[in-house]
Length: 456
Image (cartoon, rainbow, N blue to C red; front, side, top):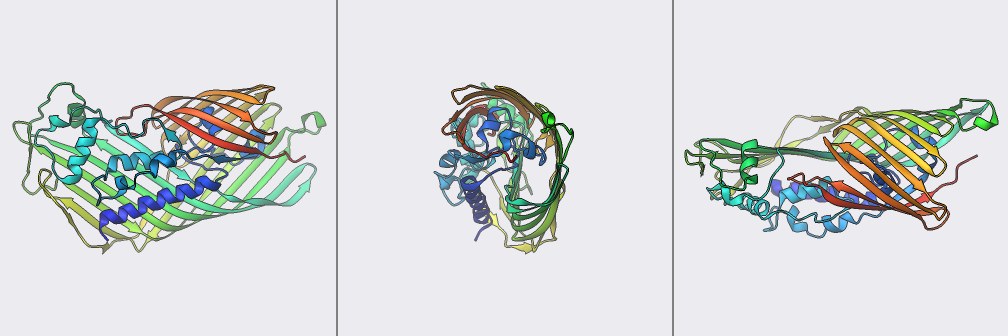
């Protein structure tokens, strides 16, 4: 099996895993992979990082089941993931995997220049005049990624004393992590975006992409506790909460792919062959065995209608992958080349660490109104979101918000409708920009929320 086809297998495994998660997921903590349409409408682009906040917000005492309409788009054309197919499109493949869950309007509306450029690279038939590919404006730098880690389990009470509760939490679930980074040479990006022909003489123009995926099982053991902050019955909801999880990670699939494209031009600005240079090189490391762990900590408090929380996830997060092998593929000329592939060779163990996910959140529930916000940092750098919800006696709720992640602001909005006293349909609209041109596209999310009764 070739290196490119093994990459295809990993991509399909990730997609199938996401299908399974979406069918049964209660909660996912995911950078840009938020599953709950209510939270998306309130501005969230990622699952809550605060374990304790989940214990105290009445609206979080529910199970959200995502309706993954985006998978109808992502899975309808497998040719784009198949390097052996004439329809192979690595750009679309990465865009799909980076935002696979929700429906994106005009998701595959690539400009003619983009499609032609990708097709030429795929087939090793790049025109010597790069101006024939003008017509799209690729972003110079793109970061995308997420961690989906839903967990199923429960808490066993160990002690209850004077309103205080202490228990052991046990759970398990899948763990999927995906990160991708793309760097596009500024000069090449400017040429492709130009309305008039551009000449870049005697230059080395580069495109680099790194895609890393991990799939594992997480076994969780933790602590759940709460203490009353007031003794009178009128303030019985005022409590302090603490939650701690330790996740033992059993890795079963790892892929790390690095692609580097080099385009050399001559004095006339035409593509040329530089002696000794490798125009296109792909290196791939993979493994099927890894072990690791991570710690999540959250604290929270309720003071009347106000709820406050602070959480730190992925403390010490790591997986050490063993029995790693590497393969390489290269194209010796862009204008009339064929791929040359190496066999597998063993390499040293690989340790993968993910950055901390740190959040502070607050919510104020005043009758029919709820105002919520969160600030922090994670895979996408700085994170901020805020939103407001207005509930009506008819069982309808209107929501709106804004979110900042991956260095970009986007608006959000949505509605909720009570189908029964315990079942609601939530729909959200949001702006999505996970594409090579960072164009804002309309995203639509939907989920079913099954409300649980608060224990007295």
